[in-house]
Structure formats: C-alpha cells, structure tokens
Length: 177
Image (cartoon, rainbow, N blue to C red; front, side, top):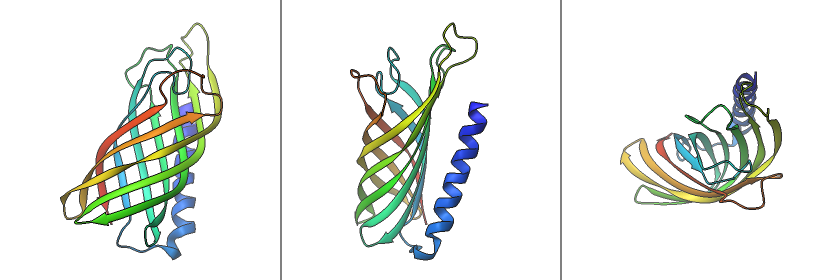
C-alpha cells in the first residue's frame, strides 16, 4: 500500500512538474539523475542507523544559472523489517554554473517524507512529515550526453530526531538533454 502510494504520488509529481514547466524550458541544459543515495544516522527516525537507497531527480533549466528540480528517493533497502523505509519527494530551485562540461550546482528543496516499517515488526510505524534539503554537487562529463554526479545535502523532516547525522550523499548517472 505504501509503496503504491509513493510510486503514484511520485509519478503525478513529475508529470505535473514537467507539463507545467514545458513552455518555459530550454532544451540544452536539462538533466535527469538516477543513482545510489545514503542518509546519515537518525535522519528521519530515532535509533535508526544510516540507510542505503536510491534517488532520482529531474532538473529543468528555466533561465541562465536558474532552474527547478524535483527529487524522489527511497531509503531502507536491505534493512530488517523493523527498520522504517523512508520515501522523500522534494522540489525547489537550483542554481547551476557550467564550464568545460563540468556542472556545479546548489539547491534548496522542500516537500514531504513518508516512513513505514513492515507489518511484521513489534511496533508498527507509519507516518509522514514535511521534509527539506539544502546542498549541492558536481556533475563530471563522461560522454556527450552523460555525466557522473557526486552530491551532498543536509536533509531532515519536521519531526526528525534532535540528534543524529542529517547528511545525504548521492552518486550516479546523469543524462543531459
């Protein structure tokens, strides 16, 4: 049920995002990213160690140096049933500077997160909250339309535990269009 909600809400989010911005988009500096992501200890839930997952993002270039970015990620892959799986969906502005094919960027994103564990756990967790992230990264060119991304963010939610490491690292393939 929760996976279906995350997939459907992500699809609607990206479709609305792409259709609403299509008329103002330059077709030279847009990119789509998919890759590995890891969040630090207790980023969203108390007593939960750092979680591995995947991340996907779409950046649409609107004006020189300025664009809008949508980001969806899921954490908790390979963890025990008692560990809450967390899905985030974020959107916000992105500033980019590109030279010699290398793209440096910074972004501020806001949206939501949903955490839930398996029904087999002794204590069932299912909740959602406002989420936000701020950070940036670098895209290094590897082929004419492809690059490799390294990124770091501060990420948290409105009800994140007070302690813990709220960092997020991501790396993966970027398709430029």
